[in-house]
Every structure is written in C-alpha cells, then in structure tokens.
Length: 247
Image (cartoon, rainbow, N blue to C red; front, top):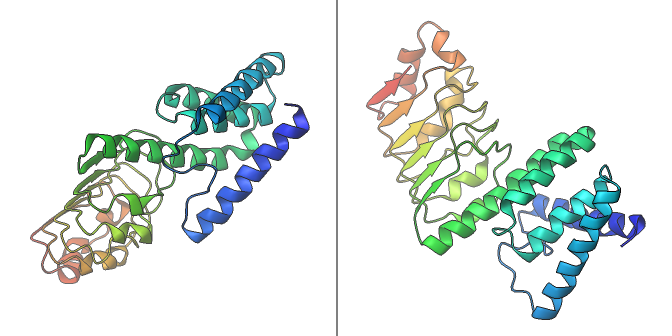
C-alpha cells in the first residue's frame, strides 16, 4: 500500500468517525464488535504486515502509523490493545499538531475495549481510572452499569450523554479537570458522587446534581469553589436532600 493509498484509507475512516461522532453513532469501519470472515482477516493481516514493514523504512510516516492502528483495531482490538497504545505514543511524537485529536481517538478506543471486556465478563462495575482519557463516548453501551470509576484522567466535563446511565449508583470522577456537570442530571439511582480535585469554580456548577433524588454523598474537596466563603451553606441550600457534602 503506497503513501497515497494510506492517506485515502485514513482520510475515509477519520471522515466517517467524525460524522458519526456528531450524530451519536458508531462509525461503520470500527463497530464495538465486528466478525471478520477468514478471507477478510487474512487480507487485513497481510496489509498490517506490509504497513509495519513500511513503517520500519519510514518511521515518521504518520499515515502509516495511523493505518497500523486502524488495522489492528479491525483485526482484534483487545489482542492488539497494548501495541496500539504504543503506536499512539509514537504517532503523537511524530505528529504533535494533532495531539489533541489523537488523545480523543485513543480515549474512544480504550472505552470501546473496556465495554467489550465488561460484556464478556458480564459485570455492572466499570473501572476506567488512570487511562489518560480526554473524552467519554459509547455511554449508550453502559446502560446497566451501577458503579463507574473515571478518576485520575484528563476529563474536562461529564457530558449530557451520561444521563442515560439510569442504573448508576456510584460515580467516581475525582482527579480530573472537570468544569461542567451537565451529564449528572436526572440519574434516579445515583447515591454517591465523588468529584475531588477537579476545576469546579462556583456552587452553581452543581445545579444539575439537584435533579438526582437519591444522592446522599457529594465529595468536592480540592475544587476551587471550596475556597469561597459560604460555599457549604450555598450548597446545602441548593442540595437540601444530600445529607453529606464534603468540602
């Protein structure tokens, strides 16, 4: 596969992903699960081998690196997970101008893998801490999750799609860079919300939380709003049903 062919494959895949992201759907080239025929698997494996050989000759060919990542995703995302992350590191070093996009794409792939592992294990607890996540996606796949750990990542917001997790009881999102809680709304079973060491500036940012009727524990320690005089009183007034608010 030549350089032009690599660009066409990558551009088509990226275009599809961006369109489907904006519509809230999965891109057809990368569903969470895709059964490959033996023939297709053989072809993709051959392409992967060829791309790796090309990458050895042109170690800074960003199109080649991204194509390798996409081929590994198509073949077996769990089997190639560790190797995929290594290629992401190399690609970010080669193409620093697209670092933010690559971080989001990496986050998407890690979430897909976590959902697959969870489905195979048939569990309702999902641990996504310390994965360097920058975005959340595929939340519609987590409808039965009761405990979600997002701590120690690089998230700046909890998106509206989080509100689909109607079975969620415990949400851990400490040690991120969260400024917005738009997604923490109308969660009927949420009991504990841990938001230590984030970037919440004003008590008003907690307004969406008031719609969670069973919330009893809210931990906000380490957020800028905790430095403001009268914050605890303001929060108690805003969230009268929350029995334990830690600042």
